[in-house]
Length: 60
Length: 222
Length: 245
Image (tube, rainbow over all chains, first blue to last red; front, side):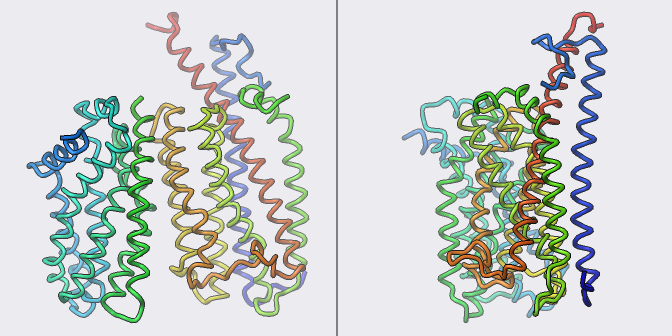
């Protein structure tokens, strides 16, 4: 990889910004998923049932 | 008298009454224009240069302030539900209310402009130019603002959200309004181009505003 | 399985769980290839190595507009066909689109400083993208302001469609106005003017970012459907006789 020239800091900062925001989006999606599954598990443990009779945590 | 004419007359009457909000808009306009020299400094040459921009910004903020009255009062006393259920098409009713709002709240701003222009050291031609662009542009502000007002009508603290929603849509009007005023005052750039675009924005909003507002009202209230 | 089956949230959940791993893999591979190609791309004779910023700036800019277009289609689905998944698609796309718009503005600003000497310029292209960003934020605020999800969806749909006017304005802003931002070099009538050495990495990164959006969007839609299931069950639970005091 050729050296990045006099404006290297701008290039690196741009790529870093993209990496950080994309990582944050991925983290948001993943933690939200875990949070919702946990809530569903807790609701099911408390005895609430869905109208269809299937498990609350069933993903199909 | 047709239903729409009655609606316009009623809205204008209510707005002009004490506590109706029309003249509050002018007062706010005055406040903004008076505050600017305190913030910017009393340099008359600078004020003259910024004059059209200050007047336009004041008019934009003043019309934003009075926008939530467009539907709120009617929603609170149930008149909005009656309007929704009546035989007049909701789109025309929204257009009528926006027209009434412009007559009661927008026109006073335009009338106040020459007086406020004096405070900003603007000469007659400049003030005239600003007033003309306001005349062409304030309908756009009212009719696009109506969309935000309709979206926010059923929310309890909708006033702030209304401003957030309406501002991005008002920015083009502001840009072309100030550009047209500046072109008329300083000269080389053409006045016609930004002014025609300003008129086009107003005309487009006369159509899009009522349809979008009616759609928003329908799902907000059913 | 027909398209109409996708309207069933549970079927969608099943489909999403099946294809997400593939989407994640595809995204990772394409982005990896794109990043390698961006890193090894030659220097531009005018811009030097800073042309590498283009490979992340342009895909983010394209996506910021693409996502609003997707939301507009979903908005039509909500208003015209009352498609249940259209609401979910609309709501989940907004934060992702806002993030891409933010990145387009940031990377563009960092590219502008070496190129034009300024971090920001109030020209037509930059101003209209900033307005797009504000509209994304306003839309997200509207979603949170209304309690009932289906009413929120319809209000958001109206706002999305009204805001869609900004997309062609952004696209053609560099043609209609004399702007600092450079003109179209890829999507234009005569075909791309960009040299192949830059065009290929750019297109690969664009595909990679689009796959990234699809992955995030489908995963977020899955989360939103689960969130609504939680809400329904919580309301059922609150109404149960044995739970009432």
